[in-house]
Length: 210
Ligand code: FE
Image (cartoon, rainbow, N blue to C red; front, side, top):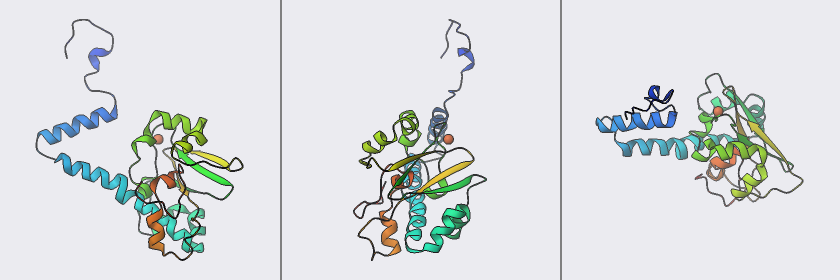
């Protein structure tokens, strides 16, 4: 776009400063040149966001439910315990695992941008990166959880963890009642991405999709 009306700075904004816009522009170019298939790209993003990513975390959580020694190791030295299951360690970021109990519920946010424990959860969902979640998770965590269908009792303490480039948090949900005889694999299938961010709990009837 060319304009004669000179507004300071605008002439220099040839490329949109927003990373999402830049990515979109790059994607469009790659598709236009026939270098990538948009369907393949969508499938890839879906895999990291919904399938591969969160399944790693789900397996970590399920292991803690059947193996008390592993649970201890995960809480003490998260990076090493996660690597035990074959998942790559974060690159310099420190992983912290926060444990939900009957009296404490943990919620993870990145108020600054979108820091996320990607080796165990994959790509963050869109809502995690949204401005409303980033601010409201801190101001009104119970209200946010209510929107996800989780109503916490008044006597449960809510702890909100603000992720940074250096520290990534993973919520360790409580093992749901009624799953005492379940296998590790069956348990892993119950653990949703959202339960490891802390916006919901795991129940014996919850699916592992989101
Ligand atoms: Fe961030």
